[in-house]
Length: 80
Image 1 (cartoon, helix red, strand yellow):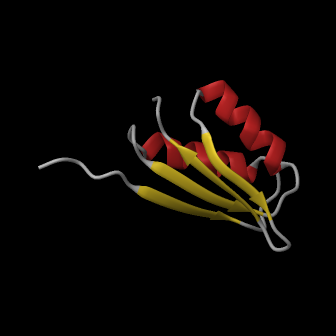
Image 2: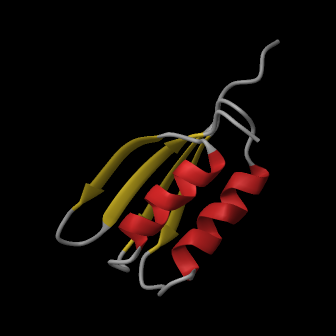
């Protein structure tokens, strides 16, 4: 039996900095290599923050989209 990758969804809408990155870090701590984290945020500072977090941790952003209601980032966990 193999471990299936987990998709963790984090709703951080309505929280201000550092809330979204803190929520992402908490989800990351619970994740395993191969998992995917999808996080939603409304704080405009989240976009550069998540890019910096990904560069620092070495975990790639699969997609980063800014819509009228939220910013959505999808991160693949490749490093712990």
